[in-house]
Each structure stands twice: as C-alpha cells, then as structure tokens.
Amino acid sequence: MAKVKPFRGIRPPKHLVEQVASRPYDVLNSEEARTEAEGNPKSLYHIIKPEIDFEPGKDEHAPEVYDKAVENFEAFRNNGWLVQDEKEHYYIYAQTMNGRTQYGIVVAANVDDYMNGVIKKHELTRRDKEEDRMKHVRCQNANIEPVFFAFPDNKDLEEVIKTVTAAEPEYDFTAPDGFGHHFWVVDDETMTERITKDFDKIPYLYIADGHHRTAAAALVGNEKARMNPQHRGDEEYNYFLAVAFPASHLKIIDYNRLVRDLNGLSPAEFLEKLEKCFVVKDMGEVIYQPEKLHNFSLYLEGRWYSLTAREGTYDDNDPIGVLDVTISSDHILRDILGITDLRSDKRIDFVGGIRGLEELKRRVDSGEMAVALALFPVSMDQLINIADTGNIMPPKTTWFEPKLRSGLVIHKLD
Image (cartoon, rainbow, N blue to C red):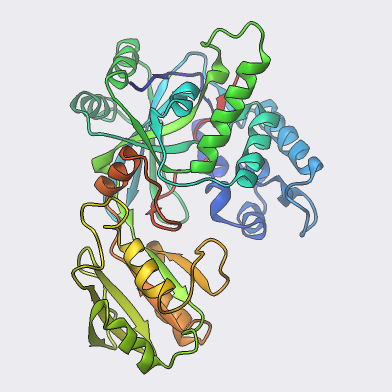
C-alpha cells in the first residue's frame, strides 16, 4: 500500500508565485530558459537551469554550475522569495487546459515504495540522466521539482479534493502558455490524517511523467539511508516530492513521428508496401486525425492518408502488442523504413501532440522530413495495464500535458 506523508513545503509568497514558477527543467534548453528568465532574478530557472547565469555555451554539468544552483537556492530563501511553511501540509494542485481541469494531491512519496515496486514505472531510464538529476538532489539536499504520479480512482480522495478546493486557492494564475495553475494548502489536521489513511488503502502509484526524476529522488534517499548509521526510516530523506492525480483526471495526448527519408523508396513504392499490413485510404489535403485505436494518420507529399492496421498485425491480448506505437514501430518504421532503434536513430524525430498535426505538415512541406505519422493516444488504462504486468512501453509513447509547474512547492530532505 502507498505510504505518503505531509511535509513542510518551501514555496513562494503569494504575490511572487508567478515570478518564481517555471516550466520543468527538461522541456526547454538553456537558451530558451535564459530568454524566459531575462530580467527576472526570481525565476526558478536560476535554480533548475543555473547555467543561464554563465556565458552562453557553458557546460550545464560543470561543477561550478551545480554550485551556482546551491548558491541561488540559498539566496532565494534569504531574500524571502521562497519561504518554508511552519507546519507539515499536504497541498492540492490543479491545472486547467482547454477548459478542462485535473486535480492532484501534493505528497511526500516513500523511497521504499519505489524500491519495492509499490510505485510502478512503465519506461526504462538512462543511467546518465539519473546521475545528472541525482547530483541536483544531492547538492540541494532537496527535491526542487515534483514528479507526476497517477493512482486508481478513489472515492474518499475525490471527496478530499472536492472539500479542499471549495475554498479560495492560495495560488491562482495563468502561465504564459495559457495553462491555469491553482494551488491549495491543506490546513486542517483532520483532513491531513485522512489523506494519509486514504493513500494507505491505495495499492499502487504509477509514474505518469518524470521517470528519471523519480529514480534520482529515490536513489538519493536510499543512498542517505545507507550512509546513516542511526537510520530509522522516518527521516525526511526517506520521502520525495510528488503530485498524485486520480487516473481518470489525466489525459494522455498523442506522440507522433517524423522520418527524414523513405529508405530509398519512391512515395508510390512506400504506399504500396504499406498495403501489406494496413488498409490505406487517401484522405486528400485536409488534415486527418486518427479516429480510434489501430488507425493512423500519414502525411506524404502534400496528402493525408488513413492507415488502418489489418487483423493479425497486432495482439489485443498482449499489453505491448496491442499498442499502436508497437504496430507502427514494427510494420512501418522497422520493416519498411529500416529504423530499429527509436532512441538513437537520427533519421527519426518525435513531436508531442500538443503542437498539433499542423507541425507535422509544416516539417514535411519544408523538405526537412519526408513523411509524418500520427498515432491515436495511449489510454491511462493501457499505461496501468503495462505497469501492472511488469512491461515497459516502447520509447516516445506517452505525452502528458499540461506539465507540472515547478516552484510552487519544494521538499527539503532534512
């Protein structure tokens, strides 16, 4: 069962939250962060992307960059831009996109739960990326940015969310990208105890987004436990910062593919080869969106095509074999276009559905790419099924939006 606890959050005063809060470290590069933080010394980018405080081109992994992150975090606290709460709290964090709001509970999640598989993953992690995030957690002795969890819908926790969010939020603002962010402090001790007990009935938590951050946070906590001869198990380092959403609140959006060439085939030959595994229909010049599972959208030479996978090209009884990303990877990318490693092949690129199919069209029309493939989004049920069966999703399968805003609350490890 999931073990969570409240914590003394470090967060901005209400009037500074919009200046402090930022996008997550991994959705923009150093130059984009430099631009967004320009003229704003209070931007969290000075802590999570501290290379922006050096000359352009500075190696973000240099020791002095990590030192700068520590210096900036301390300065933010000394300046009163980040202030620690007097008491331990849970928090409710809601996000609004396109008129739809999802509500999550901000918790300190348990390191042992990650190590023992109570917190389940569906993606592989890379050791180099884990190590980078571990350095940040170690040097700050804090989880600066939260990880993004889902949990099976729970009536009691829905009631908690409904009760807490009936009050005025502590933070309520719209970020520059148009997404709304709303944040409540759970100040009632009875409600706090209830959240802890209700999570204790939840069998598993699922990593929705932030596999590397989750691994890094848990590994640092585990490291601290091993190094402490008086380790008891209730120390703050045994926990890390997470926002957990009921699964039904979340919506995975499509994650699409672009390929630079047709592997020596002419467009006509490529379409002919597709006929073996797909029913191919020419949909004309108007953008075509996949309509259901096993239906794909292809853009080639100014025209959109509907591809419907033929019987026998997928296995509905296999959590991985049923995925459209598996069908397209096997029967289009591998068998026809010769792309076998989605992580390293330079001929392929990936575009989150938040950017729309217009982005796919633009990049093919520009001549940069030869063909685009749009997929029907994976469902939360599929993600949970894959995690429950111990499987791992193929690379670049899920895209969650909106991303969690960083800087609304921070968790210190002591």
